[in-house]
Image 1 (cartoon, rainbow, N blue to C red):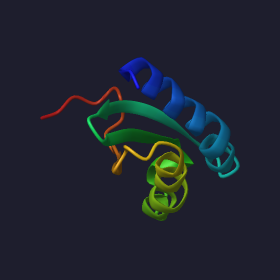
Image 2 (cartoon, rainbow, N blue to C red):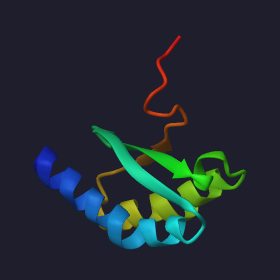
Image 3 (cartoon, rainbow, N blue to C red):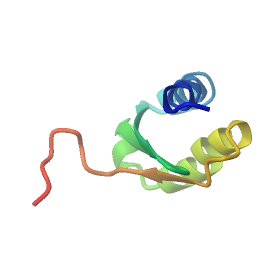
Image 4 (cartoon, rainbow, N blue to C red):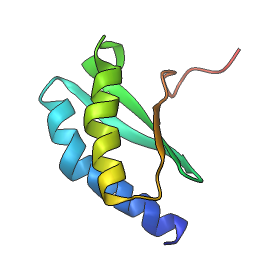
Length: 87
């Protein structure tokens, strides 16, 4: 699978399988990057500061992606907002 095809597939999973769940809780999710077998996402809205975001990452996001894209071995959440610059 090409990088573009992989990105499109993961975007579709996020849109169809994950986003409805996080939107129902006042949040959103975006794909940040895909590196080798790791997907990085960013929670937005109320999900960004939610104390159970790690459970959502594991039980919803990671499960959805890994079930449809078995070559993905890890899903990580990026906590820094897009406008923040590293120090």
